[in-house]
Amino acid sequence: MGGVLHRIFLRDLVLVALAFLLSLATGVLANRIRPDPLSFPYRDRASRVKEAGAKDPAVIAMAVVESAWRNGTAVFIDARESDFFEEGHIPGAVNLPVSGIKKSLPAGIPADRFLIVYCSGGDCEDSGVVARALLKMGCRDVAVFAGGWEEWSSAGISR
Amino acid sequence: MIARILLALVFVSAGVLKLPDPLGVADGMAAFRLLPIWAVTPLALGIPVFEIVVGVSLLSKRFLRPAALAATGLSLAFVVLYASALARGLDVQCSCFGTLEFFRVSTGVGLVRALVLLALSAWAYWRVSRRGA
Image (cartoon, rainbow over all chains, first blue to last red; front, side, top):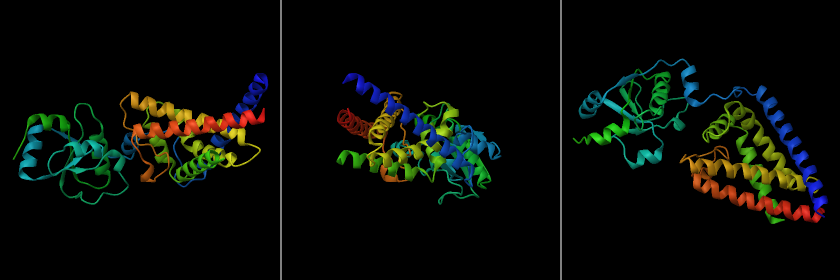
């Protein structure tokens, strides 16, 4: 009984492995006739945006950010995922996480205004990715606030 | 029988819904930060096809047993992916069912969903292999 089950399992395993390899081959071959084939090897969103030829956004410090916020001269873009945005963000900021980047500029983000993009702070990279994507979409004046939410929330700024 | 049909429905729909958006699937897989970069593209292209093959085979008489084994293997892989993401504190919203927002769940719920799939598939395989022997 045990030997039979063992043989059956091995036979099934070989069939499954064959089906898996054939599926991979089918998927990879079908990719060749797609109008927008997937690249080999995979490139993540950040490198796709960078390779698209967008220039690097300016990086600005807290003092500039605070003054822009007080004077209402900038639109703030929060590049963190929505869960974090809902927990707290710079008042008036618009949420545009990396996962929300589409080919065209989302409604509510004016291309002709000064846009300040931030993420968590520290060494988070999403603000840079979003800022480059915004530049590529035709926004003229985009800057990254490197200190991000961490620096803003610890500064205790209020109007 | 019900478990079989349910599993078939889950795998076929997951595969079909992923087909139009391979880039989304690749981004979803890469978000787990577990697979080597070279494996992401072939898997993102091949897994949806495999899911459809497994789902359809679950409804056939001839290939039912290997299909149940494949379903168990796939579910086990999903469990490992989700459990490791949860252990590393990653909040992964995979595109397991393509672009359908309804199925985009948090890592914890994803793990429970994968565990249910694993239990159903393993049970189906155990049943059919006993019958076969």
